[in-house]
Length: 263
Image 1 (cartoon, rainbow, N blue to C red):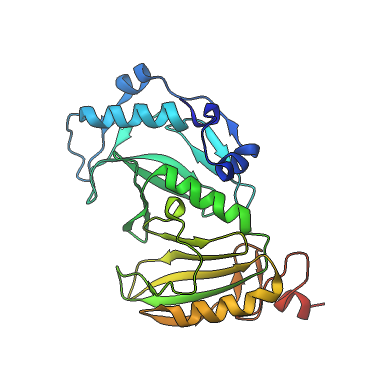
Image 2: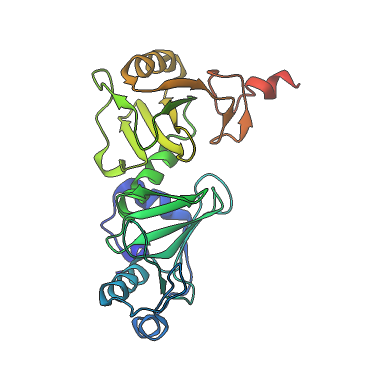
């Protein structure tokens, strides 16, 4: 069943997809006929049967799906007339998603985990496409709440540790290898892997509070609870697409930081 025909999605994913649209998708027969392997050394190899099955499942479920998240480019899903699989360090994968906000492709492994390769370094981003959608849906729910953006640098391949004593409950459905979410009706905390090449990994840390007066306490709690790296101030908010003074809250609808200073 295509995801846009599925009435059993979570309420937040259904809300995320209210502005989605659906384009054409490849049939199982087209995938079988066009399936091929592209190896890094140019050698030819037979296409694994499980790769054809995975591409077929993906196209039946997500083919042609497009939805916006932060910007106007949107998240685009589908094989788009190709059925090429690639061997990699994480297994066989195929190009299935274009992340419009990051203007970069996301490959899909045969078990539906996703991989993004930047600066020649592949990294598993999502535990499944369903988890990716839940993470996007959670972000869409809270992006207009007052928030503060920071960063934390950790050793390559590591992730920040979080003592969750004062946190909301872990949002298991939205949490994956590069997205950590804790949320309730009043507060949300988001750790997102931003860069993973070079001498350190950088995670963006976002604190959200439905009511602005609760934001300072949330930020202080997170600063004490998240350890294992070096905190970095961030002057750019990707959610609001503007610069602001480091650690200054973004209050939707209100000029903040460098925007206000320029007036």
